[in-house]
Image (cartoon, rainbow, N blue to C red; front, side):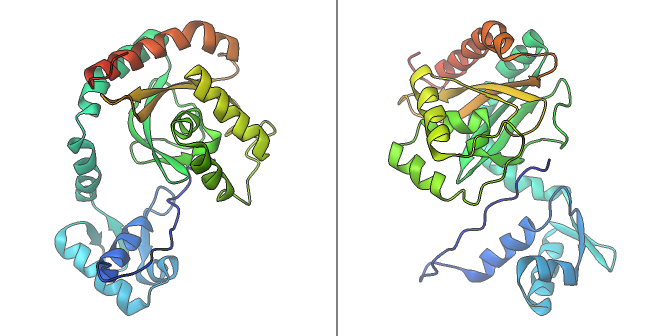
Length: 266
């Protein structure tokens, strides 16, 4: 399966809305893991811009060093990472979390990730690999649908119930990723409520066959959930029972340690 692309919103332009800047971001977002390089015509088609408009933006990005071209195909350069790392470096949480995540991955011998909520998606902000467990390569910046991931349910559980319901209504039509995927409102809301009550979430093969994960929240000084931490594994060698009995205590210990570093009283 593929990580979900960023959701397109419908901004309402006002006096403070800079349309050219928004279009530039749309051009950047048109490149992804499956579309690493594009012609001018493809960029225009994928963004809904005219060829002339797409060309101006691409040439501007090229001048600034964010895009390169061989004369026909355009592709992003490593400098584009500056934009994402500006966000990461502005939050001390990730410097604090990485050593604890590495220790957790070493302890359980499974991959460990941290993510934040962005609309209907979780966005990966830190990842410690041990095994490749999904058919797609997940890394920093990867997006997955929040309602069908353990980290997503942890982050959604921190929101008011009416906000969860509002976002749930925006997920229609829903995709059945596997035979285990929860699709009905009642089941999804019940799972999020259970997460809210117990303080962690386990999702077993709802997003991809063979993928199982368990997640818990990271909290700041005010007790607010600012991110989620998970352990993910392969269902054929890591059962739900094993996740709860062997991995959950280590996960909760790591989240408490990181939260304490953020000033939380846990």
